[in-house]
Image (tube, rainbow, N blue to C red; front, side):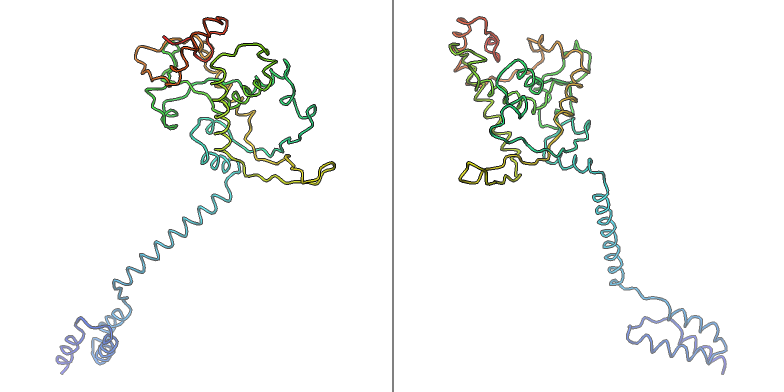
Length: 333
């Protein structure tokens, strides 16, 4: 009888694939059989293991994967929030300035902190608004010269490529300078300031050129170029700062207050950096001596308008030899 019970229990406890809804019923039956068997300890251990063992289906694995992904996304998002809220202000400012600028090695060299500056927008305070608004004089010219000088310096091939230029077309530092593969460059901001100064000089043309001087044909070309450079620069970085108005004595309508607060780049720091780059390259002092391209240089075509103006340039240079060299007017070969 014990043999039959043992064999019966063995056959009953043997694993059979089962549907989930019948599983508990069959486990209860297995436990009953275990308790009635002399081998109850062995079989009841199997019963307990069978009841405790989790049954993971495909839905369980899928849920595990989804929860893992969501947890990773949460950790990543928390990291970004912490990073942007706790990184230094200077680094954050540089990040946003770089996003609104083309590539420049100045970003790697400078902190690019912004300065809170209120513009002097007064209309009638000619004598109290600084030297740049004064009538022409040697002192005024020196002040303008200090901010309009366009220093050339050397940059790497990578810098040329990052601004979208073809290195094979950009002027290289001459081999005699022994500086390796370097290219000539300047900061556009200094050229824009130069253009502003040229327009200023035209406003005071009697002082700078004399009332009876015959103007060089390229003078008007230069002024038109500068006006459009300034226009494009202002439109590219158009200010959205607010101008308010006040009621002012003697005025019957609202009077604009042009003393507007701005967040400005540190012009002095940028200018100093550019000049330091120039000072580091001793051969840049000989830049004016470069008159001919090297034999392997690629020569680009000149603007067609130059050739339309060429007869007038030649005639003017013949009549005014003292003015030769104005913006390449006499370099045509």
